[in-house]
Image 1: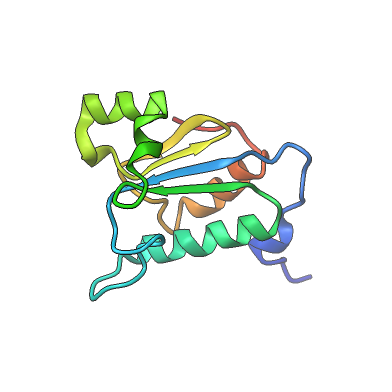
Image 2 (image 1 turned 120 degrees about the vertical axis):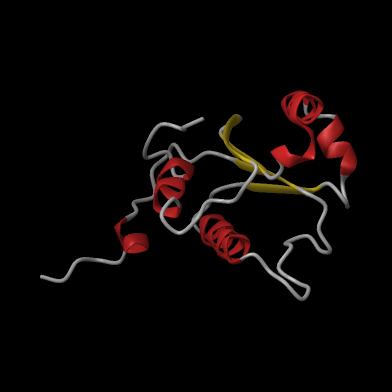
Length: 124
């Protein structure tokens, strides 16, 4: 019997969490425009879209467009003061820092999906 694709294996549990993304300054809200585009950023944007379609709440902030969102979140503000803008992007799942300074790569996306859907503990 053929194995189901990864996305088809996910079951929509009642414990899905909110994802908050605090992006560095980018030319547009997704960052997937311009002459050089980070493939991990493109794939992350697609993953967020898939998760939103599955009912996960997504909140995305771009430092260049919504700086007050960074200033009013105590955790984001503290990390920026301590580590500078190299800490961006900051990705929170369920209010906890999940990843900082980069987007999930190909190998990390399945774990990210499961965490976003409440199927495993959030990592730091």
